[in-house]
Image 1 (cartoon, each protein chain N blue to C red):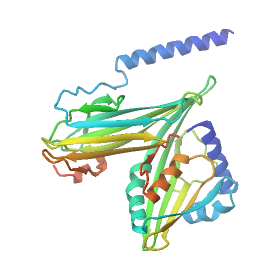
Image 2: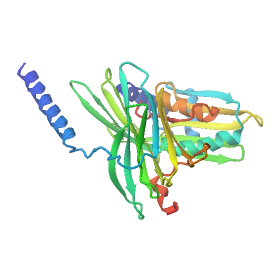
Image 3: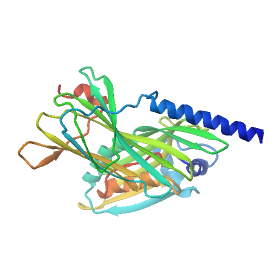
Length: 167
Length: 169
């Protein structure tokens, strides 16, 4: 009995510390300012496939400098089907799409990510389709030129290939 | 990765290794799987030229399977963290494309036998042309668990629903 109370108390304290830490940003997650012209239109369709499980999607945005070092700028939660984001044009950014799944019954959780580098061109718009269905996820990025409805899919680039990318 | 997956993986490892030693190469893995209890060989044909299947393996395997995954599971009595690194290898020769998937547990799982470089072999997929339009795939895999990975590899072969598997499942 005493042990149960002690465990419950410890759990409550742990939960409170976790909640406060999250609220104060102690884990380093912060909202992306998203103040620039919206050139990235993200379309998200995520379905965990079960009432007892869930999947949350988000995108972390990092600035990439000439030495291929990154600086975290913030996170956008992809909690609606379409979200418009402003990514600085004419410089490299690293987008990390995060799929965080959890199962209530099994009390398990895990996170998987998909990253790509992109250098938006001024005046161009970018469509991103993010999907998660039947435990399969996909991210595709398309570029549309101004005045031309045709779009082309951008090849994925990762940080490991950063030095080979055009400046 | 749930307790079920860990248990399935444990059984798979023990059964494939025959309680003595785990396959140290892809070829040893191919030979061990047909007679193993928790493993099977799945063969299917796709209406897609061999070159396209090989290209998709080469494109998708590194971006989807070259990952380190951390999963947690929690009950009232326990809290478990498992960190697993997956390593894909794609080898393409004239008329054969091989996809090897290995896994190495960085944390949370005890190894039961000698581990080959890159980790235990988890799956091997061999693609070979049947004719100009069709390709045959032999998939050496665990018979339980890892459904997303199997589904993804099948999708890479067929060209339908090409995506990455959620390796946390």
